[in-house]
Image (cartoon, rainbow, N blue to C red; front, side, top):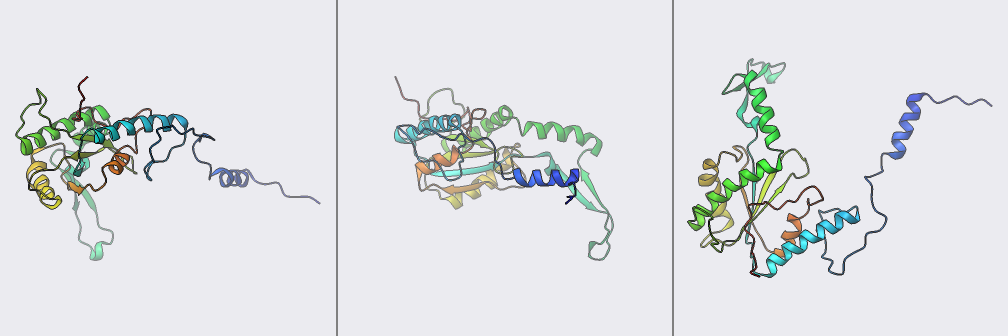
Length: 247
């Protein structure tokens, strides 16, 4: 009995269906350390190298809490993107918007905006560049809450900052772990950051508000901050102010 030969398209379709469930390479076994720390639920470890790097950084963050770092608020800040400087213009007014013609406006000619857009889009995905932006944000925080204009000496202030890309992986955003500020709540800090600090910092988003959340579990939040650490990315900002123990 003769059987019909499958077409090339059908063969390809079957192959895709068969192997579509396969995930990136995973180690069959991962050896846990004697000093293992439970991994945050949002972190997925696939290889021994990922585990070792994740654990080493997590141990450092937990040690910061153990020696006295007391994060009270977690701030979430988004950087300004060039798309925020464009706006839509409705050129026609058809009923229900059917077949309306839409154009875009900007402060500069759109032709000039292309190079500007490409530059800042690349800038927002450059870790060294956004790390430099985080320094300006830190300076405003220090001046506003602690009256510190320059960090030319140890003022005993400890603040940790972390760069992440989130699920979409489009551009970096910033998390800041802030100690308790006298006579303040999450609600009052949210208003202060959005009304007074955000307008002064040009690198912050004009669209997205700064979010302030109270921290109830210090060790758990460290696991959350460590969820994107890998061999090529250390979330902790170089401008953070950790506790430095004297030798």
